[in-house]
Length: 144
Image 1: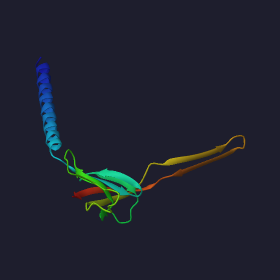
Image 2 (image 1 turned 135 degrees about the horizontal axis):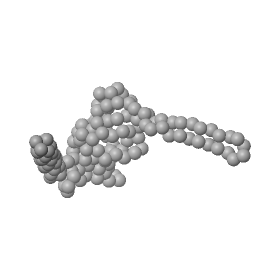
Image 3 (image 1 turned 90 degrees about the vertical axis):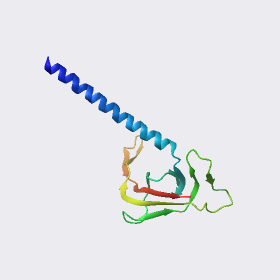
Image 4 (image 1 turned 60 degrees about the vertical axis):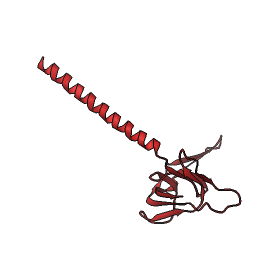
C-alpha cells in the first residue's frame, strides 16, 4: 500500500511540473505575439525569402567563409508584423534604404535529386544524381 501511495504522489508532482512548464511557455508566446517583429523580403540568387532577425535561411552557395558577414541590398519589402509601417519597393525606386545583415554559418549540400532516363525497347537507361550546394545564413538584423 505504501508503494501505491508514493507512486500516486510522484505522478501528481510530475503532472503539476508539466502544467507549470506549459504555463511558462504560453506566457512567453503571448509576450512574443504582442511585440511587433521586423521583417523583410529579400531577393537573392533569383529567389525571394521572408526573413526576420534570428531566422535561418538556406540559399544557393555564397562566396565567403563561415563566420563572414553578408549584407543583402536587394530588399523588396520591409516592415513590422501587425504594424502599419510597411515599405514596399515600387517600380521607379532602386532601393528602400533598408539593410539586412546576416552571418554565414556553413556551406552544405542539399538533398540528392535523382535523374533517371529510359527509352523503351532499346535497353537504354541512365541514372544520375545531383546535390545542390547551399549556404546556411543566420539573419542578425533588419535595419529599417
